[in-house]
Length: 123
Image 1: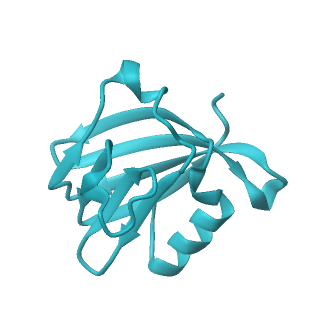
Image 2: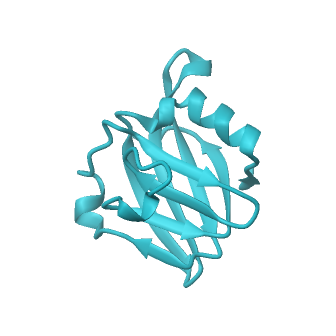
Image 3: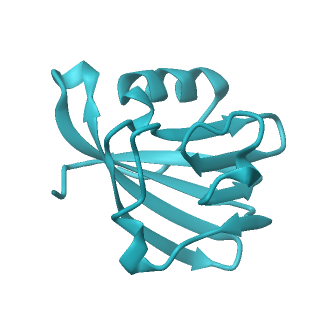
């Protein structure tokens, strides 16, 4: 399976299915290049009876980001889940509830496009 682009409808459906990754865990953060970053979350999937899965988001065209070191990554507070927003030429992914203001989050990635991939739970 490969990273699938997100549209407004598929994004809403995915976020609803994983309850915005509330109480999930950040599994990994991988800079692929200066303008492409992958972040992998372990989340519960409502469509699968709340079984755990991993969801990898890839943000391309990254033009701003506030990241944390690997040793802080797993301790990020996921109680509010994630914010993922997109329009025709930009996208944002942030830890916490920061709709309309992702760049105020303690962790965020801003870019031009975003895609996702569902993966087996990595624990």
